[in-house]
Image (tube, rainbow, N blue to C red; front, side):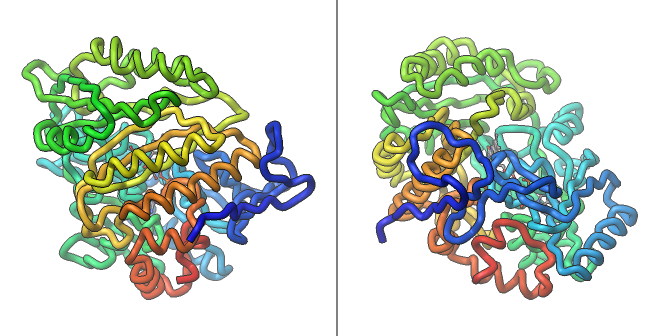
Amino acid sequence: MAFTRRAVLVGAGAALGVAGARAFGPQALVLDGVPLIVPQGGAAVLNDASLLSETPIFRHIVLRDDPGEVLLAALRAELREAAAAGRPVNLAAARHSMGGQSIPREGHAITFDNGLVEASGDTYRVHAGARWYQVIAALDPLGLSPKVMQTNADFGVAATFSVGAHGWPTAFGPMGSTVRSVKMLMADGSHITASRTENADLFAAAMGGYGLIGLITEMEVEAAANQLLEPGFEVMAAEDFPAAFAAAVKRVPMAYGRMNIDRAGFFREAMLGTWTPVAGEIPPASGSGWMAKASRAIFRAQPGNEWVKRRRWGIETGIGARMAGAASRSSLMNEPVVTLDDRDPSRTDILHEYFVAPERFGDFLAICRAIIPASYQELLNVTLRWVERDETALLSYAPQGPRIASVLLFSQEMSLRGEADMAWMTGRLIEAVQGIGGSYYLPYRPHASPAQFRAGYARAEEFAALKRRVDPGLLFRNALWDRYIASL
Ligand SMILES: Cc1cc2nc3c(=O)[nH]c(=O)nc-3n(C[C@H](O)[C@H](O)[C@H](O)COP(=O)(O)OP(=O)(O)OC[C@H]3O[C@@H](n4cnc5c(N)ncnc54)[C@H](O)[C@@H]3O)c2cc1C
């Protein structure tokens, strides 16, 4: 089936492909009949990290209590009121998902804000809303470190479990593979424990289940020993990357790749970064390294500037690689999102992520070379990760084997034409990636078609059936449910 532009702009003066930026005014963008952007005149609205998900809500509350009866009573009261009025509920942390996955339309939005972390042996008990920087601060003095988390430390721990996030520690599946158990408040008010041996079906659905199964209140998670790690970098032809990466993840505890993105060398060269344990005193976990901060200016000068893109690749693979020094595992993970913030109100950063089998990576390179330059989008960065097979999560993106995850960071114009072009390009990328047996990641923009979602997530109907069994009133809902799962 050929991909066609399905984005429809609704409202005065709406047009596709017009020259010049069109700021979001009194128009709405509708994709497959679903309103993606609906401006509200003064009503309570909530947005997420995309800045493109503004959604009317009924109420937003922030709960700061430790896991226990007070927290449960507050959550149950919210559930009762929402159920009586037929409104949805969604619990979230940092709302860095990018397509309304953490927003209940006309409903009760709840945010957790509590950093409780209690370590015991090689596991820790953590408040579901704790952010990774709080986990790192608690574990670091004990010589421990998170086993798996995303690149950035601002995100919530239960949110990480709920999207199936992964990082660059090797070689693991999603973060849920390091979770022993979760405690979850269900739609009927019961507070249950779910693990691989207790309520295993609910554990599998909640892992990567985007808050649609229950409200996670606390978790037991495995920790890793903190280590001093020394970096090494190797530049190679992009086609050679999968074999080098597969060998590296068996050898070192942290590794990632990067890709050249200037048009002349687009997806032709890759860099493999590996971190090897070395002897020495482990310094306390610090924040962002000076290199990360210093690179912001050049990183942000890239849009529209091929010369800067070429220079940046030269610096990253040259002097940058030579100057990177040893750091602790915890420091490497303690990176705030704000380090590379664009500080530009006319643009927004949008992530994509695709998972392909290592042996199909060459096909993936060809797909990116064919599709991305044909769009108007400014690609700023490509990071490559290794993710082991995940057979647990019902909504797994890697059910069949290990995958190379390619994280694409775009700078998108905040305009209707920018959004329509992004939707068009994303649909083409997903179609092509699915054509080589790959999949795409769900926490980003909702530009996949419902058919692409079903093709990518083969157990989605099972997920929907289980959700309806444990939440027959459909209390827990968000944009992911509304757009992709409600109809299954
Ligand atoms: C700059 C940036 C870098 C990123 N890097 C990575 C990366 O390296 N690897 C990766 O895999 N992903 C990455 N992501 C994606 C990121 O992991 C997800 O967007 C994640 O959801 C962000 O955490 P959050 O706290 O903002 O989640 P939120 O957006 O707040 O929530 C995400 C989902 O989890 C659910 N949820 C949250 N808390 C609970 C709870 N207590 N109980 C039940 N459900 C809950 C929400 O309902 C929602 O559906 C990145 C995103 C950004 C913006």
